[in-house]
Structures are given as C-alpha cells and as structure tokens.
Amino acid sequence: MLGSCLHQCVPIDGTVYGVALDADDPLVTHSEVFNKPPHNAAPTTAVLFIKPRNTFLAHNGLVQLPPSLQEVEAHAALAVIFARDTRAVGAAEALSYVEGYTLAIDLAEPGAGFFRPPIRETCRDGFLPVGPVIIPRESIVFDGTEIRLEMDGSKAASLSLDGGDERIAKLIEEVSAFMTFRSGDVLLAARTPLRPSARIGSRISAILEGVGRLDCCLVLEEEVAR
Amino acid sequence: MKHARIAYRGAIRTAVVEEDDQLLIMADGQRAGFNEVVWLTPFEPRTVFALGLNYADHASELSFNAPERPLIFLKGPNTFVGHNGYSPCPADVRQMHFECELGVVIGRTGRRIRDERAYDYVAGYTIANDYALREYLENYYRPNLRVKNRDFCTPLGPWMVDAVDLADPMALDLRSFVNGEIVQNGNTRDMIFGIPKLIEYLSDFMTLSPGDLILTGTPKGVRYVQPGDEVVTEIEGIGRLVNRIISEPNVQKHELARIAESPL
Image (cartoon, rainbow over all chains, first blue to last red; front, side, top):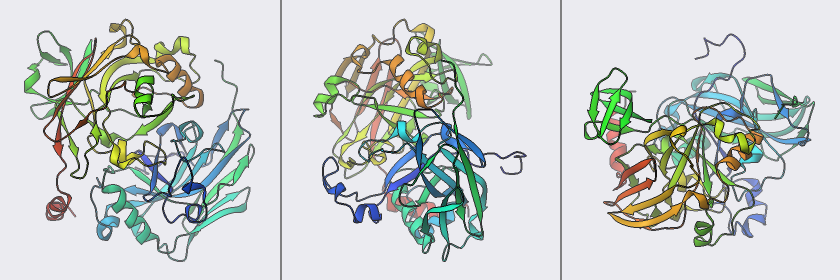
C-alpha cells in the first residue's frame, strides 16, 4: 500500500470511525452539562462518529477554509488501522486484529454540540489530515509516550498513551460487539482533550514521540465560481 | 434502465433488469431469472448520508419539531445488505422498525451545487430500508451508530433506476408492508428538505462524488418488527425491496467458531 506512493499520500482507504466522548472523558466526568437537557445523562458508551472520505488530506496538506470560517478546532488523534474484518472480538484478542497505527488531525468548526451528529461542522473537505505512514503494531510501545497537538510549534494539547494497548483493546471490544470493522477501516481511538482553535495561516501538527509527525496548514479557500 | 449487482454462478456481475420479464441481462449477454441470483446492493456506496426527521408527519410521530436545517447522519459500508437479504435483530431488542426511504445516487463530482442544477449531479435512484433499533438510542450524536449502523440492517436495492427514467422523484409513493400488511404509506413530495435542497446543503461545505448516496428520510409509520417478519419497502417507479428479519446469531457461539477457524 505504501510502496506505491511516491508523493505524499493518504495511507488509508477504509471507513474512518472516531470516538468523540467516552464515559471516562474528563469533559464528561467534570461537567454538569451532560446531565441536563437535551442529554439528560452522561454517555454510558463511546460516542462514535464517521469521518467521510472527502475529509482525508495527505501529510503537509493545505486545509482550505472559506472566508466565513475564521478558526477551527483541532484534536490530534491516534488512528488504529484494522488488518482484517473485526466483529464480536474480546479485548484479549483485539490487538491481533490491528495492522498498525498512524496519526490524524481531527478538525471541526467551533461550536458543535454533542446532541446531533455535527456533519456540517466536521465533514468539510480536508478536515482529516491523516498519515504520513502506517506504523506496524509491533513497533509501537505506548507506555511512557503521549500524543501531542502543536500549533505553530507550541504545544496546544496532549494525551498520555500509558495503558494504550488496554484502552484500545477495550474500545475494539465495545464497538465490534455491534458492528464490523472491515479490513482497512480506521478507528480514531485516542484524541487529545480540549478543543484548542487555530486560525488561517496556522500550522497544525500531530506528534507521536519517537514515531512520527503529521502536519497541515490552514489557508484561505480559493474563490470557487458557483 | 435499471442496474443491478448480483452474484451468479460464483461471480459478482452487473446486470440490467428487464422487470416485466423478471430477467437479468449481464454484460456478456447471459440471462438469469430473478430467483437464480443472489442480489447484492446495486453498487458499493461511498459516503452515505441519511436524513432524520425529514418528513413532518414522521417528526411529529416521534415528538420532534421539524428541524431548521437537515438532520444528517453517516453510515458505514458494514450496514448494507441486498434485496432478499436478512437483517439481524438482537435478542434484547423489541423496538426495531423499518424506514422506507428514497436513495439518491450521486453521479458527478460537485461542490457548491445550486439547487436548480442539483439534478444534473444525480445518476439514479434506489430504495433503502433504514432500520433503527430504538432501545439503543442515546442523546449523543443522535441517532447514534448503535441504532443506525449495525451490520446488514440497511437493505438497499433491488437495483438503481437511471435518473432520466424518473420524471419527478419528488412525487413518488412510498409504501411498506410487514407480512403483506400495508404499514407505511407516504409520498416523497412531503419531504421537508427535498432532493435539490439536500444536494445544495451538503455540497456547500463538502465535495459530493460519484457513488455517494443520500437516503432522504422516511414518512410516518413506525411499526416494530421481529424475527420471522418479511418487510417489503416499495417506491413507485423504482420497485420493491424485500427483506427478512432474523435473530442475531449468538455471539458466544460465534466466537468459538471464529477461534477455531481463525487463519492466524
């Protein structure tokens, strides 16, 4: 898959699923918002979303924003790539279904809520830079590492990946209990917390120490004739 | 013309449909009757958009006001199943209901498509039955994936009808039947956001591409189904899509089988 890619390209070709919230998220455990309408109760399962293909962008890509959109929110995310069809898999064997990992930058218009799927806010073209390459599962040790979001070279958010194997395995068990991840599908299994925002001209990076980095730049959209 | 994708004599084939004669004609001229093939989804959809609450009568049936902008959720490829297929109902589910929906298949790449040009981007139409399992509804990204993205719970087909063959896709009767009894009866003219507005709305912020599919929502008529039921969703000018509900296979048994057969 990677060998055919002379220029920077997107190293994935499956459906991308992600986790926006889970029961352990600090946003959930430290906020009263989710106990009020329209939510009425904190989430009890992983809150999942799909990031469609038009959002995929290669390493060092330009994210084009329309003039109406002055800033975007960003998460750095660890992307899990499935090696084969994965359904009803227990945590103990879940990682044997994983081909490897890559990085993603999950972008959104500010202000999206959690009640309805925020399609307009999260599914703009180029809103999921992903790559640069897939790192085989065996060559990553999560304990002691973190995934980091940088904006113009400064750390904006980070997430410790201590216990990452167990967390990822548990998540695969939970989701594969009701749906199949196909070979090549992707799960954004860990996202940096907070939703720091960046403006046009910013360079955004997702970094996994010792493993790699993924960059993108926010630019003003070229005027497109209607 | 109507276009199907089938499995026939061990191969995946595309075919055109002669509905009157109940015949499928493959590219090499081979012919097969409707009962001689396995019906696959008429194409493998790329990005799939589904509309919630896009008919006012259905929205009020579920105690929601009609939305101010389209309520859209996405579906993965795992959830589709072809005509005459089977959709599994988990053992703990009593509130699984069908939703007959007009599927709009995008045929051209487009961005910022104005509503008056929207039909230029449509390749054709098909039928979807967008099952929901209401027990699993959560107030997060509602309707959540556990409700709407289950394996094989979105029958699609039996075929795609070319856009040129449907004079007005915004005036088609939709009907659903459970075990032969009519349980849903609506018309696409009652959509809140019609096809041109949906294409305009989506393409305002994202590029639409060939193979993208928009499931345009369902009218009133929630009725719960159970294993053993035959569910038919029918749209005027397109056809009828047949599906059967089965009990979801027992996961523990399945796990044992998989460990035994695992290639690794």
